[in-house]
Length: 370
Image 1: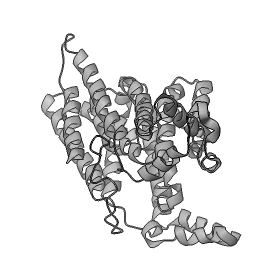
Image 2 (image 1 turned 180 degrees about the vertical axis):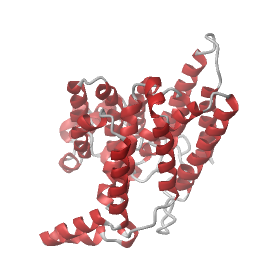
Image 3 (image 1 turned 135 degrees about the horizontal axis):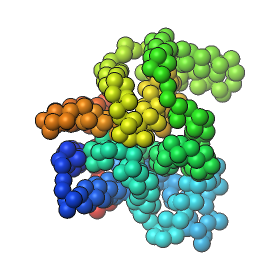
Image 4 (image 1 turned 180 degrees about the horizontal axis):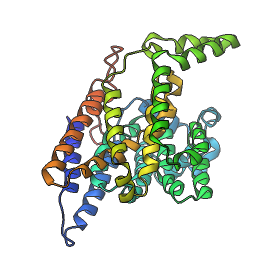
Protein backbone atom coordinates (compact mmCIF):
# COMPACT_ATOMS: atom_id res chain seq x y z
CA UNK A 1 0.00 0.00 0.00
CA UNK A 2 1.43 3.34 -1.05
CA UNK A 3 0.53 5.14 2.19
CA UNK A 4 2.53 2.59 4.18
CA UNK A 5 5.42 2.84 1.71
CA UNK A 6 5.59 6.63 2.17
CA UNK A 7 5.31 6.12 5.94
CA UNK A 8 8.32 3.76 5.94
CA UNK A 9 10.40 6.00 3.65
CA UNK A 10 9.78 9.08 5.82
CA UNK A 11 10.44 7.07 9.01
CA UNK A 12 13.85 6.05 7.62
CA UNK A 13 14.60 9.62 6.56
CA UNK A 14 13.58 10.89 10.00
CA UNK A 15 15.94 8.40 11.62
CA UNK A 16 18.89 10.16 9.97
CA UNK A 17 18.40 12.93 12.55
CA UNK A 18 19.63 10.49 15.19
CA UNK A 19 22.98 10.06 13.48
CA UNK A 20 25.86 12.47 14.05
CA UNK A 21 27.09 13.61 10.67
CA UNK A 22 30.40 15.20 9.82
CA UNK A 23 30.58 18.68 8.32
CA UNK A 24 31.01 17.11 4.91
CA UNK A 25 27.87 15.01 5.39
CA UNK A 26 25.60 17.73 6.79
CA UNK A 27 24.36 18.51 3.30
CA UNK A 28 22.78 15.05 3.28
CA UNK A 29 20.07 16.31 5.64
CA UNK A 30 19.31 19.24 3.35
CA UNK A 31 19.04 16.87 0.39
CA UNK A 32 16.77 14.49 2.33
CA UNK A 33 14.58 17.39 3.44
CA UNK A 34 14.16 18.44 -0.18
CA UNK A 35 13.56 14.81 -1.19
CA UNK A 36 10.82 14.42 1.45
CA UNK A 37 9.31 17.71 0.27
CA UNK A 38 9.15 16.44 -3.31
CA UNK A 39 7.56 13.16 -2.21
CA UNK A 40 4.81 14.89 -0.26
CA UNK A 41 4.10 17.53 -2.92
CA UNK A 42 3.68 14.99 -5.70
CA UNK A 43 1.85 12.51 -3.48
CA UNK A 44 -0.86 15.06 -2.65
CA UNK A 45 -0.69 17.04 -5.88
CA UNK A 46 -1.01 14.14 -8.32
CA UNK A 47 -3.84 12.30 -6.56
CA UNK A 48 -6.93 11.70 -8.65
CA UNK A 49 -10.40 11.18 -7.14
CA UNK A 50 -8.76 10.49 -3.79
CA UNK A 51 -9.55 12.31 -0.55
CA UNK A 52 -12.77 13.52 1.13
CA UNK A 53 -13.23 16.73 -0.87
CA UNK A 54 -11.54 15.90 -4.18
CA UNK A 55 -14.72 15.84 -6.26
CA UNK A 56 -16.11 19.01 -4.70
CA UNK A 57 -12.94 20.95 -5.33
CA UNK A 58 -12.58 19.54 -8.82
CA UNK A 59 -16.07 20.88 -9.55
CA UNK A 60 -15.14 24.25 -8.04
CA UNK A 61 -12.04 24.42 -10.26
CA UNK A 62 -14.25 23.85 -13.31
CA UNK A 63 -16.11 27.05 -12.41
CA UNK A 64 -12.98 29.19 -11.88
CA UNK A 65 -11.28 30.60 -14.96
CA UNK A 66 -7.76 31.90 -15.63
CA UNK A 67 -6.93 35.52 -14.81
CA UNK A 68 -7.25 36.60 -18.45
CA UNK A 69 -10.82 35.21 -18.48
CA UNK A 70 -11.68 35.72 -14.80
CA UNK A 71 -15.00 37.40 -15.55
CA UNK A 72 -16.48 34.04 -16.48
CA UNK A 73 -15.90 32.65 -12.99
CA UNK A 74 -19.17 31.42 -11.52
CA UNK A 75 -20.91 33.93 -9.20
CA UNK A 76 -22.04 30.98 -7.04
CA UNK A 77 -18.43 29.94 -6.51
CA UNK A 78 -17.51 33.51 -5.57
CA UNK A 79 -20.14 33.39 -2.85
CA UNK A 80 -18.99 30.05 -1.47
CA UNK A 81 -15.20 30.30 -1.66
CA UNK A 82 -12.91 32.93 -0.15
CA UNK A 83 -11.39 35.50 -2.56
CA UNK A 84 -7.77 34.55 -1.86
CA UNK A 85 -8.40 30.92 -2.73
CA UNK A 86 -10.25 31.83 -5.92
CA UNK A 87 -7.43 34.18 -6.95
CA UNK A 88 -4.77 31.51 -6.32
CA UNK A 89 -6.70 28.89 -8.30
CA UNK A 90 -7.17 31.39 -11.12
CA UNK A 91 -3.43 32.14 -11.05
CA UNK A 92 -2.51 28.45 -11.38
CA UNK A 93 -5.02 27.99 -14.21
CA UNK A 94 -3.41 30.94 -15.97
CA UNK A 95 -0.12 29.02 -15.97
CA UNK A 96 -1.63 25.67 -16.97
CA UNK A 97 -5.38 25.52 -17.51
CA UNK A 98 -5.89 22.09 -16.02
CA UNK A 99 -7.48 21.11 -12.71
CA UNK A 100 -4.73 18.65 -11.86
CA UNK A 101 -2.14 21.39 -12.07
CA UNK A 102 -4.22 23.36 -9.57
CA UNK A 103 -4.13 20.44 -7.11
CA UNK A 104 -0.38 20.24 -7.59
CA UNK A 105 0.06 24.00 -7.20
CA UNK A 106 -1.97 24.10 -3.99
CA UNK A 107 0.07 21.25 -2.49
CA UNK A 108 3.29 22.98 -3.50
CA UNK A 109 2.17 26.27 -1.93
CA UNK A 110 1.05 24.89 1.43
CA UNK A 111 4.04 22.56 1.82
CA UNK A 112 6.54 25.23 0.80
CA UNK A 113 5.35 27.43 3.66
CA UNK A 114 5.81 24.53 6.08
CA UNK A 115 9.16 23.23 4.86
CA UNK A 116 10.81 26.65 4.70
CA UNK A 117 10.20 27.02 8.43
CA UNK A 118 10.84 23.47 9.67
CA UNK A 119 14.64 23.79 9.85
CA UNK A 120 14.25 26.97 11.88
CA UNK A 121 11.58 25.67 14.27
CA UNK A 122 12.83 22.13 14.88
CA UNK A 123 15.98 20.64 16.36
CA UNK A 124 15.24 17.47 14.38
CA UNK A 125 13.81 18.65 11.03
CA UNK A 126 13.78 15.22 9.35
CA UNK A 127 12.01 13.59 12.29
CA UNK A 128 9.58 16.52 12.28
CA UNK A 129 8.75 15.87 8.63
CA UNK A 130 7.97 12.26 9.51
CA UNK A 131 5.65 13.40 12.31
CA UNK A 132 4.07 15.94 9.97
CA UNK A 133 3.09 13.10 7.64
CA UNK A 134 0.52 12.03 10.25
CA UNK A 135 -0.05 15.31 12.11
CA UNK A 136 -0.91 17.93 9.52
CA UNK A 137 -0.13 16.57 6.08
CA UNK A 138 -3.41 14.59 5.62
CA UNK A 139 -5.20 17.96 5.47
CA UNK A 140 -3.70 18.35 1.98
CA UNK A 141 -6.06 15.57 0.91
CA UNK A 142 -9.23 17.27 2.06
CA UNK A 143 -9.52 20.78 3.53
CA UNK A 144 -7.59 22.51 0.76
CA UNK A 145 -8.59 26.06 1.66
CA UNK A 146 -8.00 25.72 5.35
CA UNK A 147 -4.71 23.89 4.92
CA UNK A 148 -3.38 27.02 3.20
CA UNK A 149 -4.52 29.09 6.19
CA UNK A 150 -2.91 26.57 8.56
CA UNK A 151 0.37 26.72 6.63
CA UNK A 152 0.34 30.52 6.78
CA UNK A 153 -0.22 30.32 10.55
CA UNK A 154 2.70 27.88 10.82
CA UNK A 155 4.83 30.37 8.90
CA UNK A 156 3.73 33.22 11.19
CA UNK A 157 4.84 31.54 14.45
CA UNK A 158 8.25 33.16 13.96
CA UNK A 159 6.66 36.59 14.21
CA UNK A 160 5.01 35.70 17.52
CA UNK A 161 8.36 34.76 19.03
CA UNK A 162 10.10 37.81 17.54
CA UNK A 163 7.21 40.00 18.74
CA UNK A 164 6.60 41.40 15.29
CA UNK A 165 2.85 41.86 15.55
CA UNK A 166 2.56 43.71 12.24
CA UNK A 167 3.89 40.78 10.20
CA UNK A 168 1.86 38.35 12.29
CA UNK A 169 -1.41 40.15 11.63
CA UNK A 170 -0.60 40.54 7.95
CA UNK A 171 -0.28 36.74 7.88
CA UNK A 172 -3.56 36.28 9.75
CA UNK A 173 -5.41 38.60 7.36
CA UNK A 174 -3.92 36.68 4.45
CA UNK A 175 -4.98 33.40 6.07
CA UNK A 176 -8.54 34.73 6.35
CA UNK A 177 -8.50 35.28 2.60
CA UNK A 178 -8.24 31.50 2.19
CA UNK A 179 -10.55 30.36 4.99
CA UNK A 180 -12.80 32.39 7.26
CA UNK A 181 -12.04 30.16 10.25
CA UNK A 182 -8.63 31.86 10.48
CA UNK A 183 -10.39 34.65 12.38
CA UNK A 184 -9.70 32.57 15.48
CA UNK A 185 -5.99 33.40 15.10
CA UNK A 186 -6.38 37.12 15.86
CA UNK A 187 -6.23 36.93 19.70
CA UNK A 188 -3.55 34.23 19.79
CA UNK A 189 -0.65 36.67 19.45
CA UNK A 190 -1.21 37.74 23.05
CA UNK A 191 -1.68 34.19 24.36
CA UNK A 192 0.94 32.02 22.71
CA UNK A 193 4.07 33.97 23.64
CA UNK A 194 3.28 33.92 27.35
CA UNK A 195 5.02 31.39 29.60
CA UNK A 196 2.10 29.85 31.46
CA UNK A 197 2.74 28.26 34.84
CA UNK A 198 2.13 24.54 35.17
CA UNK A 199 -0.69 25.07 37.67
CA UNK A 200 -2.65 27.13 35.14
CA UNK A 201 -2.06 24.49 32.47
CA UNK A 202 -3.37 21.76 34.79
CA UNK A 203 -6.38 23.93 35.67
CA UNK A 204 -7.17 24.44 31.98
CA UNK A 205 -6.99 20.67 31.43
CA UNK A 206 -9.27 20.00 34.39
CA UNK A 207 -11.90 22.44 33.13
CA UNK A 208 -11.61 20.98 29.62
CA UNK A 209 -12.09 17.43 30.92
CA UNK A 210 -15.22 18.48 32.80
CA UNK A 211 -16.57 20.17 29.64
CA UNK A 212 -15.86 17.00 27.69
CA UNK A 213 -17.43 14.62 30.19
CA UNK A 214 -20.57 16.69 30.70
CA UNK A 215 -20.92 17.70 27.04
CA UNK A 216 -21.11 21.37 28.04
CA UNK A 217 -20.35 23.10 24.73
CA UNK A 218 -22.62 20.85 22.64
CA UNK A 219 -25.53 21.43 25.02
CA UNK A 220 -24.97 25.20 24.95
CA UNK A 221 -24.97 25.22 21.16
CA UNK A 222 -28.04 23.02 21.03
CA UNK A 223 -29.92 25.30 23.40
CA UNK A 224 -28.84 28.48 21.60
CA UNK A 225 -29.78 27.22 18.14
CA UNK A 226 -33.05 25.68 19.29
CA UNK A 227 -34.12 28.93 20.95
CA UNK A 228 -33.53 30.84 17.72
CA UNK A 229 -36.10 28.75 15.87
CA UNK A 230 -36.52 28.50 12.12
CA UNK A 231 -33.81 26.96 9.99
CA UNK A 232 -31.17 27.41 12.70
CA UNK A 233 -33.10 25.06 14.97
CA UNK A 234 -32.46 22.23 12.51
CA UNK A 235 -28.76 22.38 13.33
CA UNK A 236 -29.53 21.39 16.91
CA UNK A 237 -30.37 17.88 15.66
CA UNK A 238 -27.07 17.84 13.82
CA UNK A 239 -25.16 18.84 16.94
CA UNK A 240 -26.89 16.29 19.12
CA UNK A 241 -26.26 13.45 16.71
CA UNK A 242 -25.23 10.49 18.85
CA UNK A 243 -22.01 9.84 16.92
CA UNK A 244 -20.90 13.45 17.26
CA UNK A 245 -21.95 14.75 20.63
CA UNK A 246 -22.42 11.76 22.94
CA UNK A 247 -19.97 12.02 25.86
CA UNK A 248 -17.30 9.36 25.79
CA UNK A 249 -14.75 8.10 28.26
CA UNK A 250 -11.28 9.57 27.85
CA UNK A 251 -9.31 7.02 25.87
CA UNK A 252 -5.84 6.28 24.60
CA UNK A 253 -5.60 9.58 22.73
CA UNK A 254 -6.01 11.52 25.97
CA UNK A 255 -3.49 9.26 27.73
CA UNK A 256 -0.96 9.72 24.93
CA UNK A 257 -1.21 13.49 24.85
CA UNK A 258 -1.22 13.83 28.63
CA UNK A 259 1.91 11.69 28.87
CA UNK A 260 3.64 13.68 26.13
CA UNK A 261 2.70 16.95 27.80
CA UNK A 262 4.04 15.72 31.13
CA UNK A 263 7.37 14.76 29.56
CA UNK A 264 7.62 18.12 27.81
CA UNK A 265 6.86 20.06 30.99
CA UNK A 266 9.36 18.00 33.00
CA UNK A 267 12.28 19.23 30.87
CA UNK A 268 10.66 22.49 29.87
CA UNK A 269 13.56 24.73 30.92
CA UNK A 270 16.14 22.67 29.06
CA UNK A 271 14.02 22.56 25.91
CA UNK A 272 13.53 26.33 26.07
CA UNK A 273 17.29 26.83 26.28
CA UNK A 274 17.83 24.60 23.27
CA UNK A 275 15.14 26.12 21.06
CA UNK A 276 13.60 29.57 21.38
CA UNK A 277 10.39 28.47 19.63
CA UNK A 278 9.65 25.69 22.12
CA UNK A 279 7.41 27.75 24.43
CA UNK A 280 5.11 28.95 21.64
CA UNK A 281 4.71 25.46 20.22
CA UNK A 282 4.11 24.10 23.72
CA UNK A 283 1.30 26.64 24.12
CA UNK A 284 -0.14 25.66 20.74
CA UNK A 285 0.01 22.01 21.78
CA UNK A 286 -1.80 22.82 25.03
CA UNK A 287 -4.39 24.83 23.13
CA UNK A 288 -4.81 21.93 20.71
CA UNK A 289 -5.54 19.46 23.49
CA UNK A 290 -7.77 21.77 25.53
CA UNK A 291 -9.78 22.85 22.48
CA UNK A 292 -10.11 19.23 21.39
CA UNK A 293 -11.65 18.29 24.74
CA UNK A 294 -13.94 21.32 24.77
CA UNK A 295 -14.97 21.57 21.12
CA UNK A 296 -14.63 18.12 19.54
CA UNK A 297 -18.22 17.10 20.35
CA UNK A 298 -19.54 19.95 18.18
CA UNK A 299 -18.86 18.98 14.60
CA UNK A 300 -18.97 22.50 13.18
CA UNK A 301 -16.21 23.60 15.57
CA UNK A 302 -13.74 20.88 14.61
CA UNK A 303 -12.24 23.13 11.95
CA UNK A 304 -10.87 25.47 14.61
CA UNK A 305 -8.96 22.64 16.26
CA UNK A 306 -7.11 21.88 13.02
CA UNK A 307 -5.03 25.05 13.33
CA UNK A 308 -3.15 23.65 16.31
CA UNK A 309 -2.45 20.06 15.24
CA UNK A 310 0.97 20.80 13.75
CA UNK A 311 2.44 21.50 17.20
CA UNK A 312 2.73 17.74 17.70
CA UNK A 313 5.13 17.34 14.78
CA UNK A 314 7.46 19.97 16.25
CA UNK A 315 7.28 18.80 19.89
CA UNK A 316 7.39 15.00 19.67
CA UNK A 317 11.01 14.97 18.36
CA UNK A 318 12.04 17.00 21.44
CA UNK A 319 11.67 13.77 23.39
CA UNK A 320 14.82 12.52 21.66
CA UNK A 321 16.80 14.90 23.90
CA UNK A 322 15.83 12.84 26.95
CA UNK A 323 18.70 10.48 26.21
CA UNK A 324 22.29 11.34 25.36
CA UNK A 325 23.13 7.76 24.40
CA UNK A 326 22.27 6.64 20.87
CA UNK A 327 20.34 3.57 22.01
CA UNK A 328 18.03 5.75 24.13
CA UNK A 329 17.25 8.00 21.19
CA UNK A 330 16.46 4.98 19.02
CA UNK A 331 14.06 3.64 21.66
CA UNK A 332 12.26 7.00 21.81
CA UNK A 333 12.12 7.22 18.02
CA UNK A 334 10.71 3.69 17.85
CA UNK A 335 8.02 4.84 20.29
CA UNK A 336 7.21 7.81 18.06
CA UNK A 337 6.93 5.50 15.05
CA UNK A 338 4.54 3.26 16.98
CA UNK A 339 2.38 6.21 18.06
CA UNK A 340 2.18 7.63 14.54
CA UNK A 341 1.34 4.23 13.08
CA UNK A 342 -1.26 3.44 15.73
CA UNK A 343 -2.77 6.93 15.80
CA UNK A 344 -2.47 8.20 12.25
CA UNK A 345 -1.96 5.39 9.76
CA UNK A 346 -4.59 3.06 11.20
CA UNK A 347 -7.12 5.93 11.28
CA UNK A 348 -6.44 6.53 7.60
CA UNK A 349 -7.00 2.95 6.51
CA UNK A 350 -10.11 2.65 8.71
CA UNK A 351 -11.71 5.83 7.32
CA UNK A 352 -15.44 5.43 6.83
CA UNK A 353 -15.76 2.21 8.84
CA UNK A 354 -17.90 3.72 11.62
CA UNK A 355 -20.64 4.76 9.24
CA UNK A 356 -20.21 1.87 6.80
CA UNK A 357 -19.11 4.41 4.19
CA UNK A 358 -16.40 3.74 1.60
CA UNK A 359 -12.87 4.72 2.55
CA UNK A 360 -12.15 8.13 1.01
CA UNK A 361 -8.40 7.55 0.82
CA UNK A 362 -8.33 4.01 -0.52
CA UNK A 363 -7.49 3.05 -3.08
CA UNK A 364 -5.02 5.84 -3.78
CA UNK A 365 -5.35 6.92 -7.38
CA UNK A 366 -2.88 9.02 -9.30
CA UNK A 367 -3.51 11.13 -12.40
CA UNK A 368 -0.64 9.19 -13.95
CA UNK A 369 -2.72 6.01 -13.69
CA UNK A 370 -6.05 7.52 -14.76
